[in-house]
Length: 329
Image 1: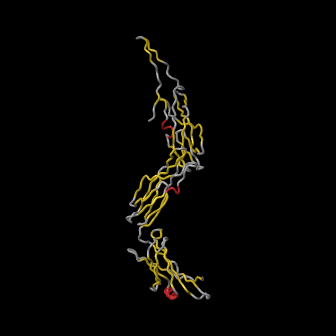
Image 2 (image 1 turned 90 degrees about the vertical axis):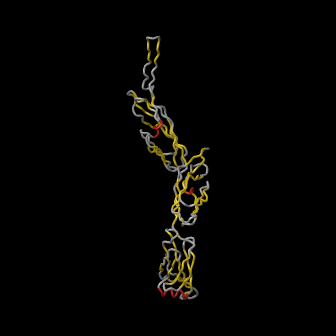
Image 3 (image 1 turned 90 degrees about the horizontal axis):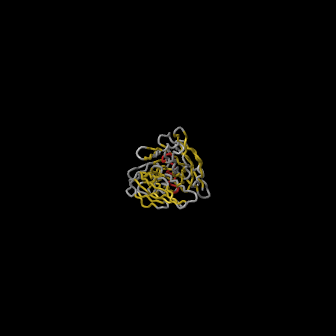
């Protein structure tokens, strides 16, 4: 709340007949009051203090004009890009190495037709860690292991960064959230869609605990139901001293849910004519590969390619490959 200074008058009663009043104070004696301020700036980022800005806690003389701010000087490595009479301040940490920056200013006001000025005041801007949002994805029913500090920045010369969990949403279980930033999230009910972890970053700088603004890690859970099954072309290897001796063939398929590979699923392979080529289980990237002999190669080539199918409930996704070229060993 802005306080107002009032001009003081002194009344002295002498006996019962004489009243002496001191003359009104001059404009120069009545001046606005500027008070110090503090703010924080994320490392490598900026701070913007919107109007009334630094004037928010300053005091003007009653009956005078509007108070305005006037820059005197700055210290520190931050770049002051704006300082307006309205009190608006913008500073950038262009070198990502600021620790403490100061902005010194005075308050001007017109009182009784004269411009009067406050004593100087200082805005001190402390650099704090910069916590940044991040995103993860995983198949429903699996777990996510990550570290929220991987993309966060600390004040140069300060201590190590630590993470503080301040909130979580979604159905997944937060099995672990460590001050080092590491976390483990489990989709124990296998139907999560989106989970979030909101956290702050702490860092000790010059013996003080500097704290970032909150950041959020968002985890998107991909449904288990596969959405795509891609089959690579049939590969035929040639072996032995003769390049016309075909010895082994192979075909691969990748099973995906969303953009992620779906591991641990059984893929059935056959020629387009129905001759079984074998089964394989998808790896961590969702890829399964089978190899087969000469008779199966011939039937596959003659039938027009290989077929891979995923028989897991509830989706059956056949996909046809094409005849591949001959590859020499």
